[in-house]
Length: 633
Image (cartoon, rainbow, N blue to C red; front, side, top):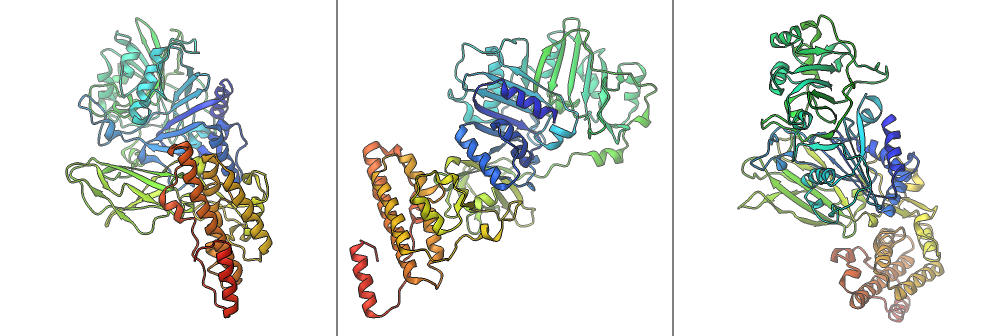
């Protein structure tokens, strides 16, 4: 993968990474997790589900803000998502709301392929091109991508405008502070996009009419002659097309096109470099523009169509982006000119129909579902776009029983409920980080859940109660234990062994080991003053109190070892009671921001005490123990 090696080279030339933001039209999240994320972290490609968890842990520890923006139509939802990389679908209809916008609110696509890399030394590298975040984009197609180091405030503001437009949450000084100095020394390029500033054609023209426009584009305007006519008077267009089935130009023939070919206003060319036989298609998009003033090269996502170039004053634009820079007048991107081009060289209507992009239907509203691992809660935000809000849409979420009907505010188009939902079984989110929208008579629609607070993402657990209790007696990091297994793999692509999948082992644990380990954890709770560490020990790290409570709840359901299970439940509840006191103490001494625990999470630490049936003497003995140990009822 040549692009992967180039990407790694860019990272190697930077300091410790602070931000990695990527945009794409098509998204294969499995590809990103398997190839791109390891490159960012400098780690080996994962081979097992546990390796992916290692990547997620490394990402959390690195503090890198890794996020992906994509078109909501084109997320590959049939691929497993094994990390918590944040994926944000970009709503073109939201971006198109401004009166002066030329974006197509109904059919516009989010189509840019942009790389944003920033390190802690404030160096910024921006890349742009034609490669989607897919295996085809990075390894099977012939693509064009260019990287540049931001060297001026003009370039910085162009990049800032793009990202703050697609994500309002980035419009803060923490993300794009005022800059006086930049580390790059290449001032002679521009980052051009559809959301503000100069258009692609304006930048290529540099204030004068173009004489020659050479273009690589796999997709061409349906009315190619009409489109060329709107680009400029007396313009000579040189086209290097990708060919359908290796033989046909991907648009329909017309007499108007033939006139352009005959008059040499349009010429067709081979690529100047031979195509690799392994390449599926030439997906690169290059625009080389020559005028009396300059020669400019554009590398980006721009197809040779009206929506694709996003430059004509028509309300049909996609969101596109790329880098434009001056080049020598001797530069050419065209090979041998074709001879005798005619109708037979163009794709038939049947072939064009077969090649047509099929976009799934979006719901008439945008919905963002965020799962916060810290509080184990969903936050849901929605905005209705198409017509008057309608009832009958139901939201299905992992970890939530049943479905919740979406209710919209009567005086607007904003979601009224549900807005916040608590989750007690967060392992369901590990298995299936997707939400489902359901309506009678409609095909289910799936979206990707945005995961936050991933430093508290509880993905690993101990294989047995004994192993968990041993961790309480050890000073080692529980996350490095070799006695860990994955919490949830129900919807993933691997099947664990029976030993790993057995959540609760019912072998006998000694009373001594139980009391010794619990007392060790009790001593730690009494002394801890670090709210962050306390929270991890209660709710997120392997062997946390929440995990112990889950094991205890499973064990007390079993008919075997009733007395041991009674003690186990009592000990867990006593730890939970102490934890509540310690949280209150830390908040009182250090302030409320030191630690916060959502109310429903305290419930997850409670274990119902199993009833004991025995003779009167034994029951009196247990009552005495309950009183002596300050157990609850």
